Amino acid sequence: MDMLLNRSRILFIVCLGVLIAQLDTSVVNLAARSIGADLGAGVGALQWVLDGYNLAYACLLLTGGTLGDLYGRRRIFLSGILLFAAGSLLCGLAPGVAVLIVGRALTGLGAALALPSSLAIIADVFPAGRERSRAIGVWASCNGIALAVGPTAGGLLLEFAGWRGIFLVVVPVAALAVAMGLRDLPESASPEGRRLDLPGQALAIAALGLLSLAVIEGPRWGWAAAPTIGCGIGGTLALTLFILAQARGRAPMVPLGLFRSTPFSAAMLVAALMTFGIYAMLFLLPIYLQAVRGLGVLWTGLAMLPMALAFVVVSRRSGALASEWGARAVMAAGMACMAGGLLGLALVGRATPFWAVEFFALVVGAGLGLNGGPVMAVAVASAPAERSGTASGLGNTARMVGATLGVAVLGAVFASHAGQGASELPGVLAGFRAAMLGSAASAAAGCLVSLALIDRRALLARPVPGAGER
Image (tube, rainbow, N blue to C red):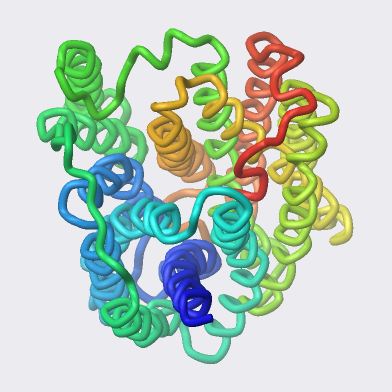
């Protein structure tokens, strides 16, 4: 009985850490317009508020798991929660947008440390089989809970506590998680044969950071300006050196041999294309609802709720559907739903019936729910058993790289029409439509990749791991 109670406390602590990270991420999108008005930030700066987190998380996710193996999962998990709390406090007290961006990067670093270690702690504590599967299912469902609760909770906080409140409320919750973790979490490590790939880590940060800088600041600097071209060349060079370093390194951060599998490479590409469009939509739809439709932050949060609920409901069935119909069919259907919903959003105007806007967003959420689990399942199933954890980590990294570039590229498309202030109604509407067309194109491309490169029998009549994961 004591062992069962202790495991329940451990599961509660790690799930609390997941909820802290995911809730914070899901509500910041709602606050973008309020932050811009209060701090005098243009669209480019708001893109960095989102991508400061995405960039740190995407670049450091694989390293976070390695650090837990080397130095102790409990230590790295709690360090991540502390960094997340510190970053949130910095965001809540930020006097200007530059400090806010630094705070967001710090929260991304914290999430990259905490989330991989939280799953590893579950694997250590819960015995293999039904009990571990149930615990991982609870852990994964926290992503869906955060997505469903986030818009409403964020709208309430913004309405009654302002945008700073969405960051400051994290601090006491994180303090509770750390206090409980110090008391109840066991320590474990597996340092044998593991080491940090510091050159690879530095090149990954340089590549993604410089390319994002070129795209986000390109509209302001000018696409032919020396800084834009220099960042583009520098990012491309860093990416090339990263690939060469990974190919020649003895303990690479990204084992390139996995990409010799066509289904694995296809799953990575679909994961990136999926989040490329979705994260841009999550950034821009609240701006459209507030600037064009005149909704307040609370009603904007409520308007985002049907999409989130559609994701939660459908994602719970995606594993069973993939087992019955095959992963290729479910992934293609999910990406097609996303493309259709995003295309519908690209056609909305000021007078479009509100139910139509909600319907298109709901279709996008259902498509995301269909696609997310099977994508990760194909990635894991296409890798050798001893590389399943690495394959899962690479899948999450691909999602975050897609998210980072989606906010950067499609945010720049929006800004080119709406201007940095994003206050003129015709420009906001034109920018939103253009960005949603880009989102729809990325989802359609993901549908085609699924149909062309995923075996139609993939995962047919087999259990699909992680079907409820975001």
